[in-house]
Image (cartoon, rainbow, N blue to C red; front, side, top):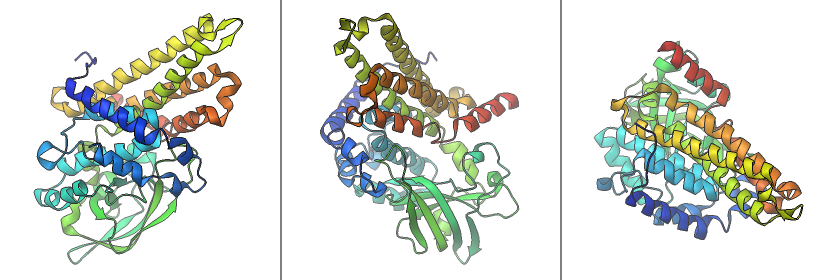
Length: 394
């Protein structure tokens, strides 16, 4: 496989729809939403509802379930396009699109019959996944012997859950959650955790603190609090004790979508810097005519293009694992994309000179947004170690 992909007519039509959505719905309000003091107020239900009207929210559902049947490559393209307008909107949709794929693949027919119509038919139904805890964060990628502090005790017909998750994307906004908890004491999360489906209005489940983030503010992250929360047996995904297998089997594209998200920020930064360089005059000529600026713009374009090729390769491979799956594709694209994006965004700001430091120009927002994915979806250093361990194991 070459790793080079050409958009199909269907993909191009979908991306054109997303571009129009960005221009009409997201771009006019993103900066104002980002500047609101209360992090919960940065979120917009109107954007979510308009995304549903455009077919974006449900696009990864199969045709027979009411979606577009978008594969992981198409979805990665859409996530990048969304992030060009705002990274938070992209995160809200990326989480939902990813988990909608899991909802179809990892669940039983009975679970699909119960939950897919609820998700599909409610224009405000977002999806979220509860993994991260204050003491169990990116380390779960490599320390499989550690265990979740959120636990479940077996009861009559189900499980009683106690504990807390935090930093959860869509945490205070989702209607349905994939929750990972420790169900077997004395074991690590790799062989003692279980994945449950949890509805928002389940008794004993509440939303805690909404995190006040530096960037990516149009996406809310929040705490999930469980106080003797009863979850029935029929809401177990897979089998009890095999929660980690759900992660490894059904989330190969998660890292890829994270990479696509931060790439969109870098593309916007590059495009703005290019236009600025064509019109800003220094030394009697547009700054793009200065060799140093022109060469730096070329390097920014190179980083974005290489990142996209890496993402597309990983997205395609996630759906075609029978043709060979390199484990590092589940970790390294996000690392590379976030590191490259950080360079591109900061360079773009420097090209703007003092203007790049002014809030009304918008680069301080892009810098704050790009910083999110140095940490989000796994801290980069941990992901590098996970990839290194995979190489060692091979």
